[in-house]
Image (cartoon, rainbow, N blue to C red; front, side):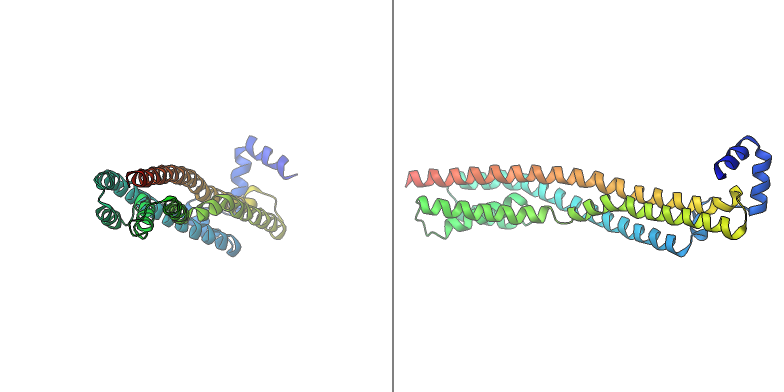
Length: 246
């Protein structure tokens, strides 16, 4: 019945205008739609707003953290390699300590400190101990790098469904208006349908950036993991060469 009337209105603009006048004008601006929303839809819009702010905070935090880690690691790697080449273990540890935000520095520091704790005795047991220290440090740094990414994944997967809930509420509100106003005109349902579309669009606007940045940052974490694995392997090779020299 409603679909037939909508088709009739579409083919008769005069009838559409008549029903809009009877049902009252509808303000389709963003502020007007927000003012016409019921409290359930407003609550959903507020939840989506909080989710968007939360995801934006995580994006900024991870971007700054990853940028600092990349910059300090590029400065750290050649310096510590030169110190180890000259067999200056203490200097290499000091260089690593100064690079607080470098993911490579955290891993290398753990291995060097474990190697230093042996008191100059270099054997197979010392190398295995240093290797375990490197593995533990890699796991800790990996957890630091992934901090907050779970939030982006959760928001990206749930925001569309939260917006869909607003859609359902908006449609129910539209049918309620039809029942209370005893009218099936387009003006009776315009407010509810627009309310439903706003929450759906808001949910998608929150979810799409969250999913995109989650995938981007996950790729960055994988690249950092590869760099840490390579650095750990090179450091173990250094320990093995030191044992052969002695």
